[in-house]
Image (cartoon, rainbow, N blue to C red):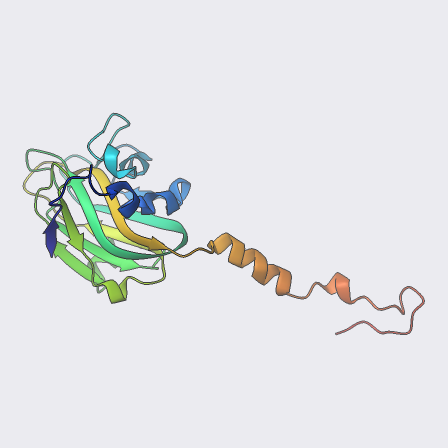
Length: 204
């Protein structure tokens, strides 16, 4: 379902609503079938810069409109809606499919797997539309993979902006990993005092 972004951002803090880009683990973002390696990273930016493509855009290889974009987050997030700004002249993606917490998906996987949700997109050149998620299915999202199977007839698919509206948990996953690591027993901590003249034996 697409909703119209029907208010002035001068009166609403749209930037904070779409601030999940700050929680994207940008160095680990990747895409399959991108014409320029690494260009997928350029589409994640602040809401107010969504129409600014001076830093580049994501485009598929000539004659093959399919794209698959992997987006990991630095903390688990809840995603309420997604905004996609595509290219002109039929190069905007016409469909979007989402997979949650599934790393390493390729095109074969995407085509054969059941997506968490699918959308029929409309051209959104001005970034005024947002596509709502089935919110209950988009909780505790560590990563999302977006599959764009086709476009509106162009030779390539272009994406200039991908935005996520939602909220992030306060605890980052790397912090959680550190806590878990600290809770795990360290064998060196269990050396006995017998080794140093004490009366304890090493814990097995």
